[in-house]
Amino acid sequence: MIRGLMLLVLVPLVNHAGARDFTVHRLDSGVPGPTLLVIGGIQGNEPGGFNAAALMVTRYNITRGSVWVVPNLNFESILRRSRGVHGDMNRKFADLPADDPQREKVERVKALIRDGEVDAVLNLHDGSGFYREHHIDSDQSPWRWGQSVIVDKAEMEGHRFGNLESVAREVAARANMRIADHEHFYSVKNTRTDEGDPEMEKTLTWFAVNQGKPAFGVEASKSFGTVRRTDFHLKVLEGFMERMGIGYERDFPGTLEGVEAAIQNDMELALYDRRIRLELANARSRQGYIPLKEGSELEFAADSPLVAVLQEDGSYIVRHGNQELTRLYPQYFEYHEGLDRLGVEVDGRPMEAEFGSVISVDEDFRVEPREGYRVNVIGYISDEEDQAGERIRRGDILPRYSLDRSGRTFRVEVYRDDAFAGMALVRFGGDEPDRPRPLRQARQGDESDDGSGR
Image 1 (cartoon, rainbow, N blue to C red):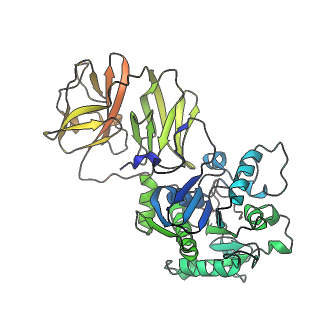
Image 2: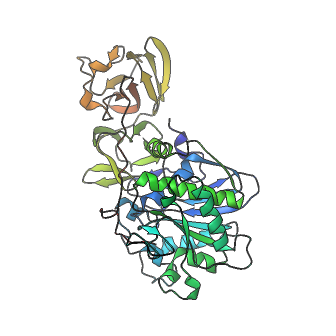
Image 3: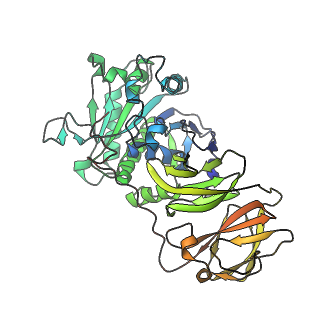
């Protein structure tokens, strides 16, 4: 079920095609407590970090204190599955040339870190191998980054969370209690940046520490697929919230299956104030003749801050982070805004359905005729231009016109003369469950992983 398209979040996700700026989401409980700033996606080829941050936005309710989330900091690089289209953004927090294309974004993030309400900062990464204090093999050594909580120094004075290494060890222990395999446990890695490390001195966490803000890096191993990395990140995030005294609830089970379902369920898109709605998790790779508004920039709203719509060669590519979900091929119409719903008889029961809604059908449906309007059920073969009043079963609609790869979900479009009024979806039931497209399981050696760490 679509959950208001992020309307509960303080920063709405209504956006324009091609926009690739990061978003800030302030999850404030209204109950006094600490504020944690969580940043994901500083490097665009680390999907565990940015998916975990996005789920914090869409699936967590903060009951004490506050969590501020930037889930998509380096959004352009996320969408292009690159560590950094304009270079490594996590090396831009010291001196940065005035002509650097990311300077303005970096300065805005710096201002967010310096905000007086922020008590601690987490920077989420996916790192190579498994960090171990002592060398075991090439994949498990002090030179690896995965499965670690990172600090730049052991302690910083003047802050209640300033005993960085101690806090990190406590959080790692909390997370490890939720991890079944001890080989996947988290360890604490102290980079000792304060002793002089030119590379680490350029990082976001070192900048934060120098602003008096306790900061930690969190690394899930790139040896795992995207879903498992996301799961590990959430376990560590919850450990930090518990250690800081931030209350939280989530609306999905804290299991691998629960995490995957939560990510898939956030893949929905609405266009033009929800007159059009598309479900993306199980979408066909191409969607033809989508009725877009003539002479208007494409506006969309999405469940997830990782959803973007990018224009290319007369079509629109819909992405969720580094995944391409579908491609929309438009047909342009004037829009009629004098109607916002349609009357439907579903399995013999009358009801009203708003545009943008999904109508569940077991056997058949029939759209009630309305004077001055006509109905077009995409893929339904009829001699009538107006298909209102006809009783339609799943077998009456050509499967190739379904929005989903299961052949169950179809568009019901309403027009007034030649102007588009709105669309609802009908979804037929059946014996076989829908099978959402599996999340791309990024692993070492593939195009989304350059083998590097923080």
